[in-house]
Length: 223
Image (cartoon, rainbow, N blue to C red; front, side):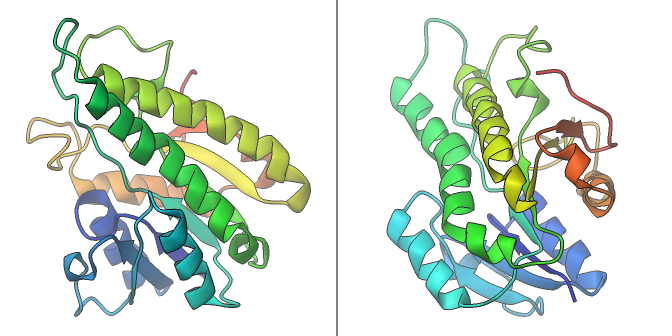
């Protein structure tokens, strides 16, 4: 049985990832900063994890012991600058977006790399956004969120190169514009369709995909 660890599994995309992986027979480890956010009747392993805290990451790594993680799914993220435009930036919010969207996924990857390395699949998936694409950045608003995802993209590209000799595949994925609290009700995709797409891409990943930036339908997204 393959194992997936999902950050931010308490709601939105994370909760849907947990539901779908569990339905397909995976061993799911769902994490959240507050255990109360995780459905205790969902049937998956629930673990507390504050992705922004080194001690919390280290504690989870110790709790997991020799568990092999086939897919480390860095999903947790925030958008504090939705609709914000030039002249009204809150730079404390920018820093928080970097802390959660950029630094935290890399912290979790470092903390759990040995668990991934001992698995069969050896995959790290980082949920990014096409708003972090410099090529596609043709609209205003959410500057801090966009910048934090662009920084994540750059960081993961470097990590992918470093981990390639260990046969670990790292990819960045855009789940689409999804109907969540963050995406809003006008978004193009429902959660089920988005996550089915992302999971289809994950299922077919190979080491040749290491370092790529992919859409939920498998197509390439420009940097």
